[in-house]
Structures are given as structure tokens and as C-alpha cells.
Length: 148
Image 1 (cartoon, rainbow, N blue to C red):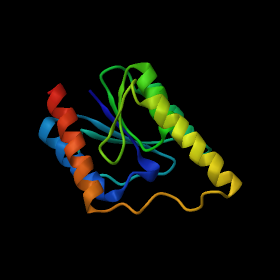
Image 2 (image 1 turned 45 degrees about the vertical axis):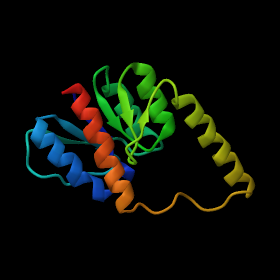
Image 3 (image 1 turned 30 degrees about the vertical axis):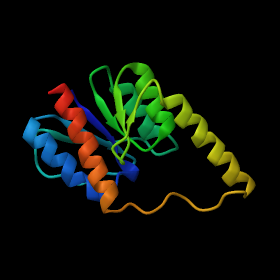
Image 4 (image 1 turned 135 degrees about the horizontal axis):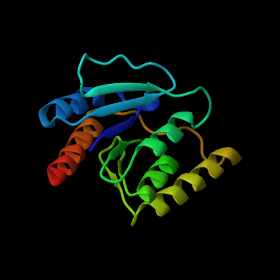
């Protein structure tokens, strides 16, 4: 297993949790972003800088992730591609994207985008807090325990 992180919007508060899990379980982690991500010196950690432009990092992750890999992303369209390829996807809140829920989450995402575009809904997601960090840690731990 390799863990791929959609790192452009990955909350910094989750990075330490992920790095500790990688070290403990000797699982390689690749951060993919449109800019360089500074990481501790480790053979398990890699940063890939994708080309500039919309969805370039997502496209690179979708190319790399294969069955048995884990992708951590808040990007629902990327999660849809990952799940279709047979890899596993987890959001930064610790929720697993599955074949059973991904299409519904994609439809909800599209509906919310339409509502924002028409001005019926304003604002974005709530800020990321301690409960979210704990939920991610729990979800990651559950997932890694089930494969290890």
C-alpha cells in the first residue's frame, strides 16, 4: 500500500497524524501538490509537484493510485475516480468514500456548487477543528488496522 495525499488543501493539523502512522506501520506516503511540500527526511515520504493548472495534482494522483492504495482527499470528483479504479479514498474528516456513497456525495457536491453559483447558498465549509482532527485519526486508524 502507498498513501497518496491530495496535499494542496490537506490540513496541516492532520500531517503529523499521518506521518506517525506511516512511520509506525512503514507505509510510504506521497504528497501530491502544485507546490513543494516540506517533509521530514524519511525514505517513506515523497513529494510530487504536479504541473500548474486546475486538476493537475488530481490527475497525477488518479494516474498513480492503484488497487490496494489509499488516497486522502476532500475532492469528491477525485475520490470518485479513485474508488472507480479500485483504490480506497478517505476524506480529511475520516469518512471513507465507498462505491455505496460516492455517487451520492458527488451529486450533493454538484448541487451545492450550483446553489453557490446562483447565490442561494453563500460561504464555504466550517473551519477545521479538534473534533475533525480526532475523526480523521480514528478513521485512518480503523482503515489501516483493517488492512494491516
